[in-house]
Length: 258
Image (tube, rainbow, N blue to C red; front, side, top):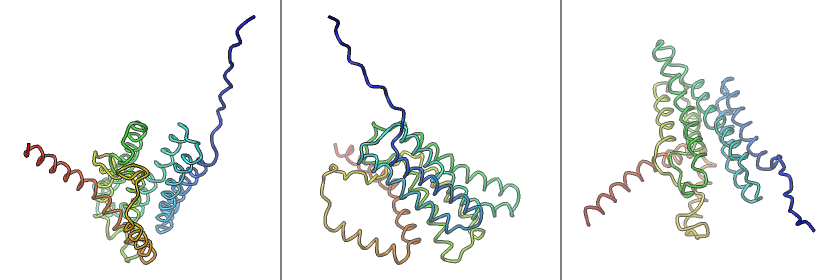
């Protein structure tokens, strides 16, 4: 009598629909931002990038809650992020402000191209590095500024300027600095708090005062969304370098004290 050998069921090559729908929505929002920027509808482009950031935050959480995380989803999410938080902000900043540099001569026009490309390339490098660190990196922190946060900094700058009455052409010598600095921070080694887990663990309770702060932030967002987002995410952008310098100074003092 022969020994029965268990037969493994065939592997299905399908994908999970729900989380990938959120990812597709995020990519569509980024694509729409590009089209709106080309048409000169910059406020709509900014809102589309914000919508992409919201959807991008939901797709991973939905996948974890429903147990539908796959390698396909990780790669698809990165491609979507490249469109929404790499190409879209770069092209919106170019059409809104950077392109005006060409009026000052050919060298300045090349500066405009270079600034937009540096931002987009850094976003691609940031996402590629993130993919290689999945599963090994400390989930409490990001290495380098996350691409959605970088996009929100740039787009909230555009939105705040539009609301204040500044045309992009008036800020064409400021925008390249923002694009390049934010882009380089994405590929930096500065550590940024990810907000995915509290420092003491996922189940750690937070003080009640944080609920009060959250309510105040929501109220401020209603009053002046553009400037509050710009201020808040600029503080977050600076937190990485400041925290790194503080840790280095503390480490050197500790070594001197031994």
